[in-house]
Image (cartoon, rainbow, N blue to C red):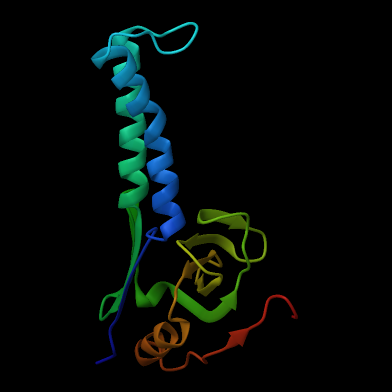
Length: 171
């Protein structure tokens, strides 16, 4: 039986929380001024209903940003990747052709991004991940803060998998 690997990554950096709080300042100030104090907000104020709708939308966006996480689980049935709250993906051992540790760089941000070299990159922070190539030749990267542990767990389920470190900056 192979080793398990579990990792949960979240957008919980101090600057991310600051951005979320800043996103909420304008809706709270506008609702407070216009609805609580009864003073129109701005030169061309929106209706109270529209203002409440926009404020609610901004609160939902802020809560969504705080809820996003990348959960990776390596176990007897394969790799489960859950990019909550968006999707969950199960990769069976029989579907995996190869895997290697890669430094995919910044790619213009975090989330899920497309790279010609790596396929879709699913990440929360950092620049390291495990590139998985499926038997169908589809490839993607799962971002991780613990690439060596992730790769070690994969190797216990796929014995012929050679752990590799690939520096994408100097191929």
